[in-house]
Length: 264
Image 1 (cartoon, rainbow, N blue to C red):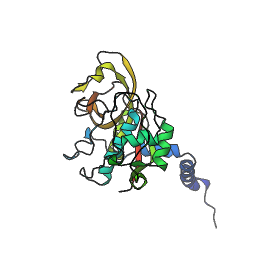
Image 2: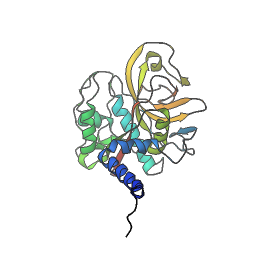
Image 3: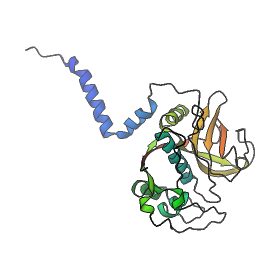
């Protein structure tokens, strides 16, 4: 029997090497997963208006607490519940207070909650519905003890399975937003944003306040803006949302999507 030339086996070897690479280096798989798509990214997309339906939930003020990240994550999980059930009327309200007091053991100070502790609690403990431990809004920096409802273990609504990191770049952000649902993103916050009441925001005046975390909900290429849900005070922005111009405030820093397991 005649032996096949070595060139015959090269394509097979390439496929095997590629498959082994994805197994050994899962981050490569993640990168390919996010940067390749058979469908084009639309010129405009907003989870508040998908065929006339709103898949987001109302924003809640974080007050003086340095806890923008947890508030953004809860907004994403609540939206994903609607998306998972393919219905904007499949509404759940999660407990921000449970996340702060029980999952993070947050002391209520100006230092943000421990994200490592929160990540672990999302996976092992999960989060309860709002009625089990209603949010306690406050302007003082104080610790609220973990005192949820007595049957809280039976009222776990969701757990985060994993965070899906999004590669840098606006195109990747848009593609991930359409594919996975709302995202958690970082941005820079300036004084004039604190008084934002509507329109397309561009930083004009005021000092740098600090880093901030918001929920990314949409974009518009024609008018060149992003849509984010903030955790600002009641009456802030456009019903708690902001339209922010492209290339402003380093929006989109450290973006990630969430893979969530629901129990109802």
